[in-house]
Length: 134
Image (cartoon, rainbow, N blue to C red; front, side):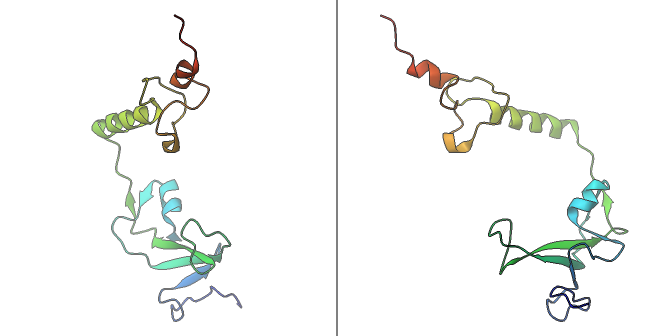
């Protein structure tokens, strides 16, 4: 196989490396483990997938991206969500939907770029723009 990222011995990259979609059976990425209801469970990555990427975001380095591979048979089940974690998550999401100035709750997350306040043309932004009747 004449692929830049085919290095099953790990001599070139220091860890066994495979092209995208060509990982051996029994290995999975974190996302694939999660889809199976599993997590790495403290094990170190045993190999990696690598592919070319023109993007500079998402961890691309030197024109390629990697995804770590873990043994499926060593993976552990995902920890269940406790009632306390559910309450904390609900509070955090409500905070992201609530305007910092007027307290209005929106059906979407307010962007931090706007300071977590109502976007122009809605909520407290409309109230501020309306002329005061004397």
